[in-house]
Amino acid sequence: MAHVFSQEIQDFLSRRIAEAEKGKESAGASGDISLQSYYDGKLLELHNFRHYLTDNIDLKTHKYY
Image (cartoon, rainbow, N blue to C red; front, side):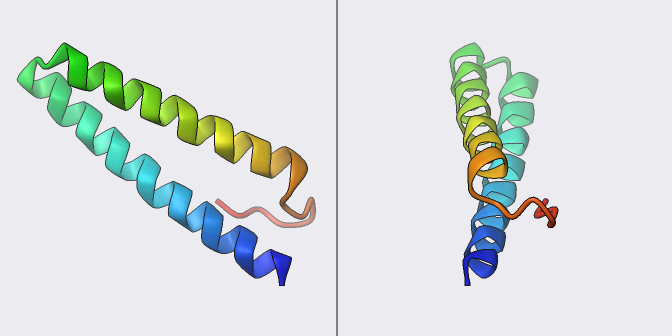
């Protein structure tokens, strides 16, 4: 069962990362530095969480993203 949950969590993270990257692009295009910084922090947090899951929780025999 853990495999299914890991896959769902990684899919959730992938969607959130894509949304944050899109938001960062639009903030950069409009010149909003504070919003761009917000998305930088959000991306850092999501990537750190993904890194933690990959190192400590996910099965080593599967690639989830």
